[in-house]
Length: 128
Ligand SMILES: [Zn+2]
Image 1 (cartoon, helix red, strand yellow):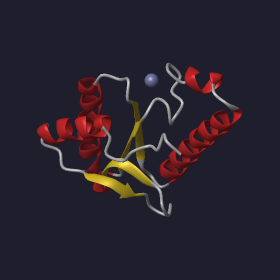
Image 2 (cartoon, helix red, strand yellow):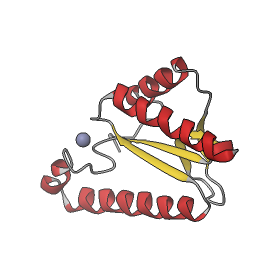
Image 3 (tube, rainbow, N blue to C red):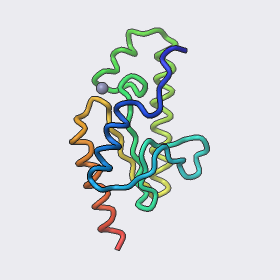
């Protein structure tokens, strides 16, 4: 398979370095609670925040996902499975009391990081 989704792609690295610059410390490729072999891209485990940085192709984004429609049946099915799995992961995390944030790679990095920082701050406020 030629189009292997890479870990640590440019999108993930960009977002992680911006979060770090904002003074937040996080875990990378964190193993999700009670979900063997599934990870999120960035996690704040103590605050139970899971962040997914989704590639437009692999996760069939609504803006750029048209690629998948014109592709073969194989790709349609594969991308559908990815989307189903994402959904299942979200539901599981919510049930465990986690907050799930998903971002598309076509979103503005600074907007994404602002939302992450706000979420971490909000979660901190409710902890006390
Ligand atoms: Zn997109």
